[in-house]
Amino acid sequence: MSSDKYVRLRQICLAATDISKTEAIFNDILGLEVCHRAKLTDFGLENIMYAINGCFLEIVAPTKPETAVDRFLARNRGQGGYMAIFDCSDVDRHKSLAQEAGVSPIFERRNSKADLLQLNPKETGATMMEFDHHYGDDTLLGHYEWAGDSWHKYVSTDVTGEILGIEITSPDAAARAKLWGHICDRPVNLTAQGPEITLDHGTLQFVDTAGQGRDLFTAIDLTAQDPQAMKSRAKTAGCPITNAGFKFCGVEFRLTSAAS
Image (tube, rainbow, N blue to C red):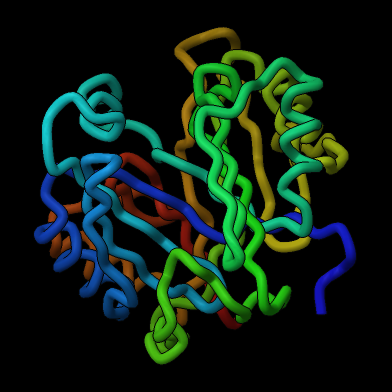
């Protein structure tokens, strides 16, 4: 079981204009099948989700103009991840911490299956932060309302291992890390690479851009059984290749071996 006051990076959400094309590319690169799909008419979007061990990669695409996702895609022009979603023991705790720091909720929903809190991305910086609590099982492979009831059968580590964390770049990484650490209720550690927050699952890395640009969610750390083979499939799919991995849907996927 998890610790009494846990907070984990449980889901990453990226945005795309063409969800069918994006699905085909991710299926091939990750060696996974979509575990859940839905049309969320209230938000003007459709989504697909991949179960990456006990965590999730979600892709959203707008189904009509002038929705939040549509505006994000137009504003960012293919840069940055859309959301970082945290699974926690107490949503109200993180709501209070956010409000202490001057960050306001923009959407809340609570029922017998799950609680959900979304924070204003203009105030969190970089990306939208969401905190959820799913009732029924606190383990990483436990109940996850947003993925439906049958996601477990899509879990496979034959090709893709697990999500290790994300990277946030900022013109003031120290200030951004301090804010996120406060909201997550976790200390900020100073490393050679910059500020870092270690969660009960997942690590948040903050990279300073020396006052240049703006806050962005720029990278996902992912393990693979064969990182070079995954990079090769990404290259064949037309994704830009980097030293550490490949770029797709606005972020860099930085690969390490699942065996290491």
